[in-house]
Length: 386
Image (cartoon, rainbow, N blue to C red; front, side, top):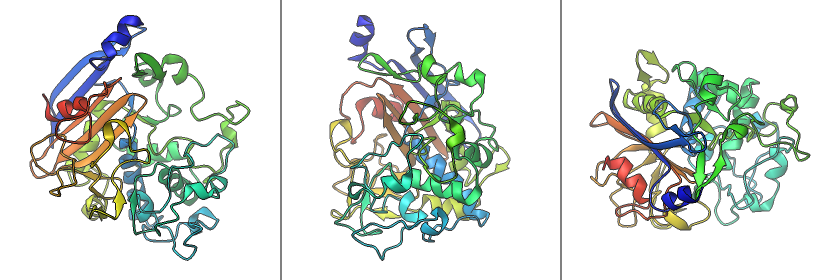
């Protein structure tokens, strides 16, 4: 463990990078260990908790329900939730899926966003700390994880299905991806290949005991009874904001879906019109209309990454002075998303004009700032393939 800690100070425990074009993979690179304790080397088929790229995949599920007429991006979500969702400082301003997906809802993470199995989302959102009292919905961008439990609750109430199972039906199974939100719906074979997440040389998530344990945050008494689930009551159970476990081969297929304007390998998942709604900027930084990073502006990601954002889609290489959002460093605009949690950094970026993309992750990433963006040096190297 001492040797692992020393190594972690200078290089990630594991990295996987898959480059692809519209037809398939063009390059696969892997280094390091998926599980140090077991001595298991990482592969491009190993599932990893991909952090905030999960939001993009959740948004794909939302757009499928929009196409089916089940959801409306611009309707007041209160009607689906069954209770009134309002920023108490702006009680007449409705909150919509479009505002939630684009982080313009006026929700914040100041009061936290993790809920126990027996918690209610409605109670969480009654806390004034959950809201930005200075900016009405639709006027300000604040990257907020709490938006996505609300999105998941709306999806559950609209369909009557548990979020993780619904995402299997809408996205993962049609694309033949053995992936899952949290671990409940992944196959045993996939669970056995889980990538352990490390931070400062210590395993912090998805070691074998964790994978075999409760697939959600337990109830306040420590119990894990999924029969307590009720549609839309909680929304955070299966971590729609960050809990997707997927391999880089699987994530590259999501990238190829973006390159294919909603279709990949003969499967049409979204219409071009839905893709346009998903990937058109809903917000562009003008110097005063948003916070460019997450709630806690500290560490590697402080300063200038979020400059344009769609419906859970980030845009890179924004040609504005305050923007440090070009991890590749070639000034070509790309769409996708970055992820950061539990020592992991991840990215999915596609250049639709060139028809190319990259999917990558690294675990136990050293605290080295990037040279050309607000991301880490490790992310920049993986993004650029250097």
